Image (cartoon, rainbow, N blue to C red; front, side):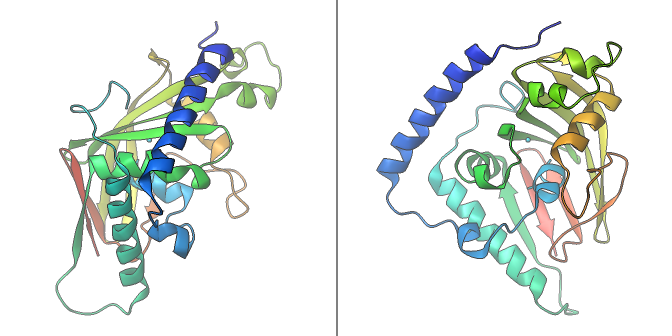
Length: 239
């Protein structure tokens, strides 16, 4: 079965690129705090801890993305990173609230340089009680080309650039986190967790983690973050 066509998505991507260029030309020289400090969040952090710091049709209402909101989140990320580099004190914990609009604005205007090749258009819907729903467009043909060609391998039948949506719950405590997946779909078609793991392993590899990320693994939160509380439309980062 074919879940998408390159031609349709190329046309959409071209329109989005033109719109981004127009926005950039009209926005002045806005400074992204993460640009001056390097990638303040790794792909693991951005996708797992904001999915942490991806849903078209999956949000809790219309998102309002803007460069101003993206800049606001960049400054918050820089502040979180700076505080994480400071010695731990016995003072009361510090908390920073990140809104859904800020996150999706940052994804739209700032995330491109940090995403792996073949991943685009990430977005997140913060549902509450730790639950969130993330969407990103993935190039599945790039995945299929690296497969063994086994006719029983379902990934060998996936083509084009298509939206992949994952819903789950982020659980964090004492500087550690875990993301429990409840459901996943490709272009609206439900897929098992094993398929999601294959996609994550393909796109989340790094020199430090050549085999990618396991969905079942707990992970350390960055920047001395102790926990992340996900509420409707926002998340609170506690250091």
